[in-house]
Length: 468
Image (cartoon, rainbow, N blue to C red; front, top):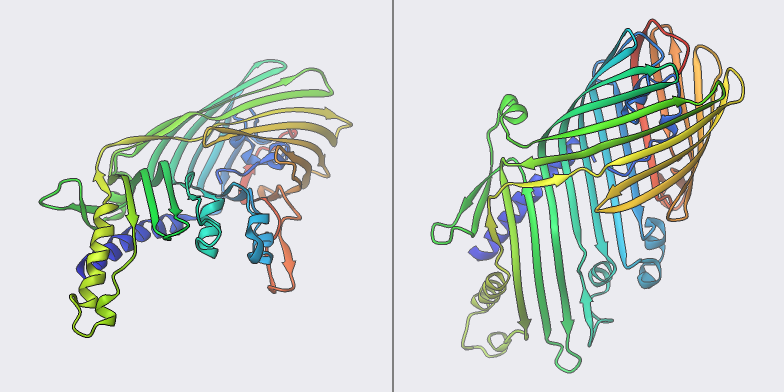
């Protein structure tokens, strides 16, 4: 069946593009609250460009400068779903979402000049967000048995995924004795993207006849390193996707997926005890996707009335069974035909902001309050933290953070920075209790945790000063 083979081939190519994205890493939703208050950390400028490392010069350890992995889910908890597969309606929310985030910085360096400090970083970022409506998950597991005479609504399904490089140039300056300001300019180069603009889909099953009414209205954009081939007779019908033979220079420097972004920050010393700070990260950040672009759209209503089984029952039936199924697949394929174009589009990178206040208890210990907000899918998500931060010695500093989220969940974070001569190692998590051992599954995994964030990195610091 050529039609079925064509559909499978196209799906395989799209899955190849998704696999290519996953190859770089696996959200956009990491909190970074514990990192914000770890005073001796060289990477603090990533969350506030006005925060200066406690040294004159630093550079990230080649290849291991900084690695940050984040995970978050909203709506359902994985463990509850696995333990209640017979009662999914009780553990699924109307909308269930997952987010994954990986930031890898192979190159990072900074240098102090007079009252200012310059930073430069190269990072690769992968962000993935998936929203799954309750009816879709329930339908896939249980079929339509509980949706007879009513709509199974799959609207709200969404995939937002990107992989891009970020080249950032930062500078902060001691504007006054008690005020330091900082800014960062980011040049972005997109590598892979999937962007769902709208997804309206559902299935209605009639009570008496069990006939299905299916409707689908979809708009989606993608930029993937595959060559698109279109039908000669229909310029909006995607015929095939083939792999591109790209050299490293072609892949990293040859595409036109470009964008800009900005970070702004300030640190204000109210007095010897109290320090206030604020920052906005990824302000106006966006990427315009122009290379290897595909736009998918579909708008259809289809009624599936059943299949004529006569060819299976009557020996000399009117049709051959293979032809029957091929025609059925062709009919469905034609009804749900996807139009494809190649027009450039733009995606935004959700901004984040931090507001913090620290109180110095003594020379080595301070306590703080921190507020973090981030925009994801045009929604604001808030987190509120209380921190204790200690410079235990010139060689060891630590920060502990208790965080409350707008969803009602809470995390305990812990971070360490070890300085052995010029070498610094940092280990940070915003949810130290997030990974648990499950004796039933005999493995470590997030279980009921809805937020995870891990950061690891190494750097060399020279000309260390008093910690900021």
